[in-house]
Image 1: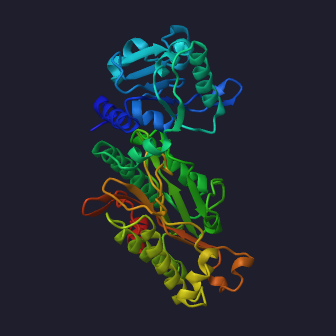
Image 2: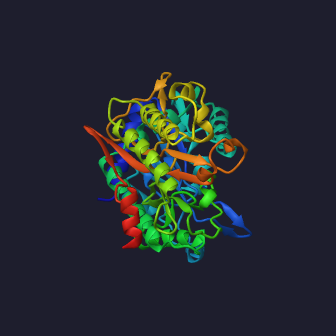
Length: 436
């Protein structure tokens, strides 16, 4: 089950139905990004553009004109060029784009200034994605000005397409769910490989290498985000990506890593002992975080709200930290005065999809978003006790411990599916795997 023309066509049709027949939408693909000199970073298509086209070449523009008799879907793209293709790879070209991508009209990108403004004519509103890249906005305004100079009717309104498009992306189709399930499976296997490979004396980057190798072995050509391999107190740094320290006996290692498979992300965190055995304190705190995650997953179901997993996990975490003597105040006081924030640094969830922190509002009309069948979110409670002035009142036996447990959860009609359940997380399972 792979993405196909029909899937992308349905997405475009749904978006055109939302913006209406008197509108036009312009969506820019990503450009290549220069790394240095004449070397570029590996190209990755803009997620919104990919969602509507499946096209993975740079320098392309999609135009949607609902109801247009000459064709509702127009794609501007790079032409074939044997000399360039010999250096950077094959291009699809306008000649093949209609058949391969299911678009109505495909045009050489070099003709965009001449032919694209015509598609704006007699349309009441123009919808585009407002981005941080002002040059895209400048091109849109140039085309509008060009149309007005020709005394042709131009759109009176420029509207942000993000809300409508991102609402569509929030609920995953069956094909998307299938792809994300595969990304989750590959990622789970990578975490298992890291656990099996781990031993004192290795460097964090060596476990990172095991993870990346597993991704590539299964056709996931890139991580969905920079992998975090954080040994010991490095786990108390939320976005630690240096991955250069040596792993020491008696410490934990936190790995936050997920692959990107066919453009869809997985996002998994596991924390385990470098030596293969938890200490008493490590296991005690780990079981608090695990109980919090289980409580959060239990309420991640249709009809509940996006905030419910966070609130459920927060309560369990605070109760556990009080029981361990790490927090001295009572539960209500801690939550009311936010005294837990020195240990519980981040929220419990974010959306997941084409982007690791995927699009879609977490609130709607001022209220937390109601969870629905087809949404995918992470559940990732964590507790962190760094050795610094913020934790000087905490017994030193807890210092330097950072634990996070993260899974990817699909909301289903009758509950949820933990897509990443293949990665062990019970402490007994982890110890058994590492000593097997």
